[in-house]
Image (cartoon, rainbow, N blue to C red; front, side, top):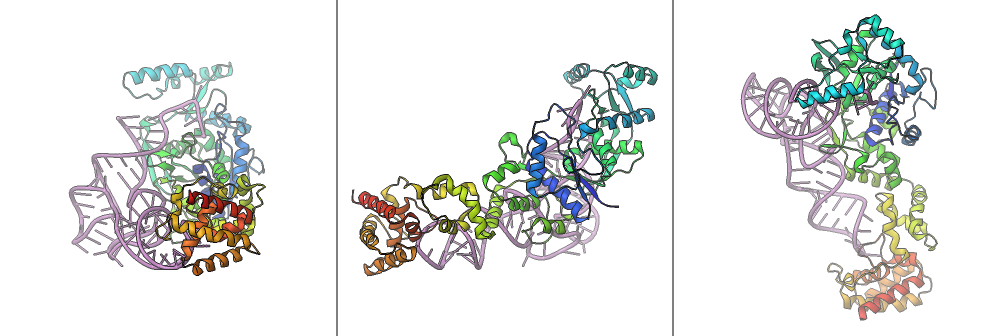
Length: 482
RNA sequence: GGCUCCAUGGUCAAGCGGUUAAGACGUCGCCCUCUCAAGGCGAAAUCAGGGGUUCGAUUCCCCUUGGAGCUACCA
């Protein structure tokens, strides 16, 4: 039996990180087992559908590198892969259940139900559909359906006994039937609910393993009742614990939590996100932590899945991102960093190649780059206290002396190269009884106006060029004299 | 409220009856150093609580507590 898995998102917005992780695990499991990974769009709730969301899902999956073997935009033998395009396939199956008694038509309106529900909660009682329409004789019900009266079809859950299913991760899960409601299978608009569509489509599409969030864990026993009523073999279920923002909140856009697209836009690299997400709720069992997608495919094993929710920790993502950036070839880094340099340095004539060399190991997330290099475009306002640094053994007096020595020497320097500047400053320091830091700290401070910079005095002097460097040193001397 | 599920440091986690309870991020020291990074070395920090079972529980069972999910003509 070839393994077939599916990722089945609803087109209600961007692909959030929990969804991305589900897609990733689903993909990994299929590929690990030489199977097929399928994309199915679950758009049966027309009201919640967000325009463009389907395209966004395609885009995100493509960017994540999770290529699906079958899906709406790639085709396949089990299509269509969008549920609204399959709308006619569901009712006959539902009628089959009505015939066997596992389901029944219901003519109660939403308003009536809401009123009864409200009344029940007002009395402090539990509301559950009372099988009111189950008592309607079948021929009468059929007549009313054919006459055009609005109806839904409900699952007829037994009043006694238990319903259960087996999960590859959570084991045997069972629930008392009397706590289960007669869910709607087919809505008044003719479309199926998730409760029905997932069963029909998973079966029709030959899905062998269903991986999805734990929000379906407690309703899975009901789905199994459906499989039994049809006489179908249920798939292997693997429910996945959620990705959390903190101990009690799920990751969600509503609270400003980033989507996959957001992270990419912020300057996180794709492979770092995937690597990090993979390890959020899954462990390879050994101490490896760097994985390419292909390595994940090889290492993936259901045994490593965690049953407890995992908190999305940005610190670690940042670390992964920094590692991936540091390890990427320099030319790739330069290409990726250039647009970020441009945001603040465009037209300034800065040597991007040299700047990129300095920034390569210092870049954690690309969106932090502009702030790190902005001082090259314009000298920030700073105070004289910056010249005092205990460890460097400098204070205003030492700094002034260092700058006054450096200024004419730099002005007279023949070739204003980084190496030449360095040699000059070093010898200038020793000749005048200054420690290296006592020369370098003041110069770097004057050039940058910052306590820390990517690169030291000599690198910055080179990037700035002679004219700008001298001008900034003059400002420093002026400040220290004043 | 009912039902279902979960529980090892701040975070991700290994462990699957006997261990000095791995490792990583983060944090804090020290080294290196023209700042900051990077790099090297080191440190602190975890089995939610209570009962069992057992010669022996982080590990198995029960309860409590805490958290999550479901309880829609949403998925």
